[in-house]
Amino acid sequence: METSIYPINKGINKSIELKGLKAQYIWYLGGGVVALMIVFAIMYIIGLPSIVCVVIIAILGVAVVLKVYAMSNKYGEHGLMKELARKQVPTTVRLNDRNVFMKNKVEIKSN
Image 1 (cartoon, helix red, strand yellow):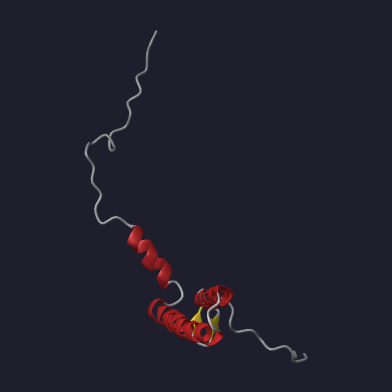
Image 2 (image 1 turned 135 degrees about the vertical axis):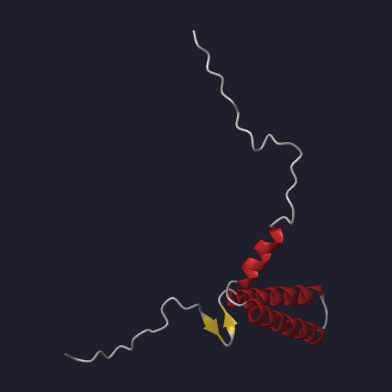
């Protein structure tokens, strides 16, 4: 039997990771970069000097990268979705009447 020249993929069912960013945070960083390019274009079209635009975008870019990496390290692959779902769960459920627990009685009419 011949040995295969193709390497075996041992990363099946693992999440994507790129330079420490896990799963959806890669997309968040990409979206941040696109947003920063749009902000740069708007500032340049408005008429701000180029060096001012570059400095502002550089500062915002560092902030975006640090925030995305912090979220990736804090929440991990699925933690952010779990955190957002946890915020939507009510702390208490109040009922003003017991009709929720009572079934509607169907009256059967006989002829």
